[in-house]
Image (cartoon, rainbow, N blue to C red; front, top):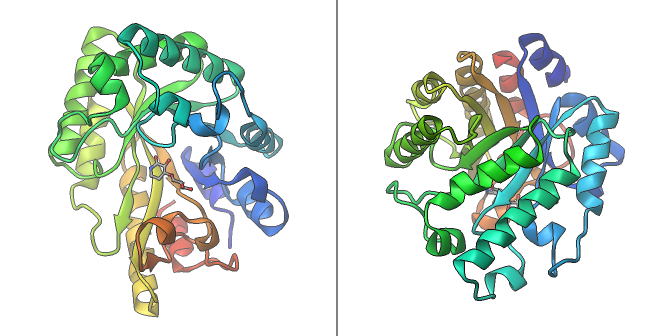
Length: 312
Ligand code: XIL
């Protein structure tokens, strides 16, 4: 398997993978460190991971990933600062006034972004703010602070690390649809108001046979707003057991997704959500589905790996 990172480097694009810090040794570490030019911590930077009880911080896994990336000449995408999921119980079970919650949000961002100041290339500042119909998702943040929590988080992140590119990240926003149009309108409004926003993350947790036909068009419309676009969490799942024909189709679909990004200069690149089927969230969350990543459970590259290489 020719390193994808060499192909991506030659094109000036990111090819990244989500990683689990505890696994960064042996074959897993070898592949993560040599085949990819960006890393995203899959869980290690989420609020419940870094501050499991109030005021008690655990940076061990996040530090380990950042140090590994630096040792391998890779860039890091921080993930994620404000989300409705994987928050610590003390935060979600508390009853907070708007002033209190606003203070917690500012402190969290100042602490976490500040810890890695100058070392991370990008942050997924806000994760999954929309529902499928394009209305704001009803979360702790939205219900207490209103939609301005988004501008507040971006402003706090910029203040804590002016050198990191700041993103809003969501799923089912890969094609042109109600949800991506809501995201588009939000980014447009943030830009008009002078709120710091550098990019949009399209997660791209896709299902075999369902790559949106409007992917490149959608990437282009965000780029035309004057922001970067990154495909941040690509995987393409299928019902198990996977057949050879399905793995071949998956290779074509990986190629199509990467090609859509390569075709738009402001699309910075593609990150896969785990490079091996042994480190994928899919079987845990989508019953009966799997085989979603470019390497099998034994670290053998699948046809999908070749699909990505062809597009780069
Ligand atoms: C997933 C992780 O991969 C799992 O290990 C964890 O149990 C749940 O979260 N969208 C996101 C990611 O932004 O943070 C999620 O990651 C997958 C969906």
